[in-house]
Image (tube, helix red, strand yellow):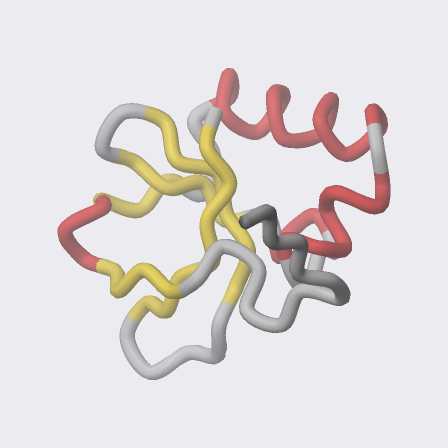
Length: 80
């Protein structure tokens, strides 16, 4: 399970889960961003797994444009 932020058609950026070549939209579960999904913890992961297992909301990877997974991260760490 890989977390992604994507744009499909003319829509706004949405959070999703990438499995093989299919993205499952997490905005239907109330997650406006990947960061919100991560902050929701284990309950969010359970919802995402249920969506993937049911095959609900799948979009082909070739039909979307991928963005940065977390567009505006709250912190950036660098080690040099």
